[in-house]
Length: 280
Image (cartoon, rainbow, N blue to C red; front, side):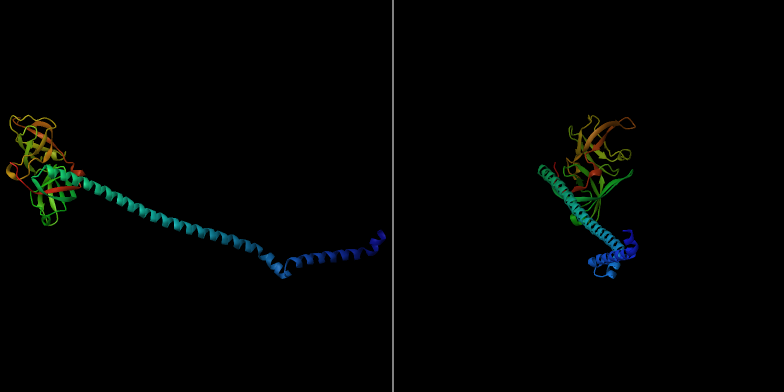
């Protein structure tokens, strides 16, 4: 055996190498079209993998952007729909309140046949200070409104008196304004007095009932209405209630502090009495 290897060892080694190379070449040629193609594929394989990864990332980002844009558009559309529904709800509430006021006004008209002509008006401005308290309405001479017309709520609560009139607007002095003065009557006793604004009370949202008969017996909570004397204003409009009775500085006469039945700050719509029948 040793003699064989000594004699033919190099040939055996050479043959083995040839066979190995042949097998390698056979393997290469059996899996690719050519050695150059196989080399190119091998070299570019990492770049193809990187490109694929980048392409997948870009596709994901594009899909995310498209999905986000679609969601934003959908959200915006939903917001608009919600805003429209909220507006419809507010309008329905406003219409409901308006209908309620008109039904109450119809009841007032049935009860007060002497109040023959009302003009509905919206308040465009509230103004209250230590010196004045008035409202601005969106009705004027083109709607038949005149100076000294009474302004009431749908329940017949007196708000004030028209003091100035324009074409499509008017100013109303609230009953607590210091320039307001009108005949008043205690509903329980029929005692007559004068309800008027007072500087010391206006800031508290109150007014004063003066010139009461000497024997007048007022009670807290007594209802006070317009007297209608002289025919300047309708009778029976609710002014407010007696909150307390006080004696003036001289101590000779007494007066009542009145709490108006109207919450001026809460008003949004009122009714102007454009004409009325005098009731004796």
